[in-house]
Length: 107
Image 1 (tube, rainbow, N blue to C red):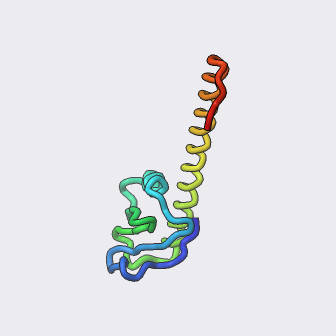
Image 2: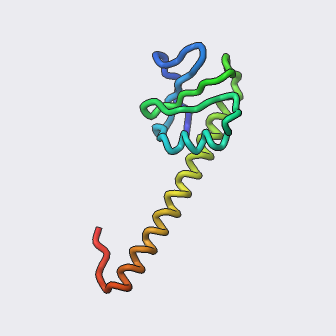
């Protein structure tokens, strides 16, 4: 996930709204927030696919943006890993049911 820019009309003295590519999902923000923990100096949220960073880090130093990008990449990778595992589990379940029933799997 890449930080693209700062969304001017949603940025204040106590929060910054960042545009990402690809657009952010709630699932990735939840994972990122769980990785940094509840006692972190920055709080992350999602607003219409954009990342909102709040907390006592303002004005932010350059390394904050680097760390945010790292956290988002780690979170996105974890979410994708869980999705692949869930799909593999579901595919196995479907195959087992098809084998037992003798019926084909329809999409």
